Image (spheres, one colour):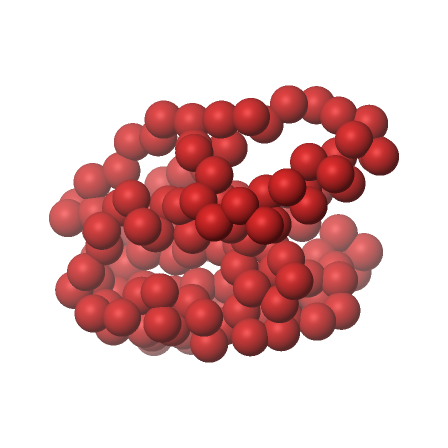
Length: 157
């Protein structure tokens, strides 16, 4: 099964999960970056991320994806204000993915909000095969690795 793992990560929690999924599924990995993605200090980073939260579709740096070559597309995003992060919403609106097997996951620090339900809405016209949320992946690495392994086994089945 040819698989792509596509994700946006702000503080590397989503990257940790995406890379683990990639290795377990031998998948292609596509990381998305907003065009204005720069290194910032903590305070500047907070205000920059707040700006992305309220901006509907921040432009992304170029990426390459041909959805037709994949049997499964796994999408990952951090949760911002109870929703998937806005850069992943830009990707979804640009990519025009329909008729595919989709799995998605979110990472968060304490509340997934309505993010999984919103993902289902954003991927209408596709076959949703799995969903997951991962709490503080960087803090509970071994526990999260087991959660990812169990989730990936379900994707293989």
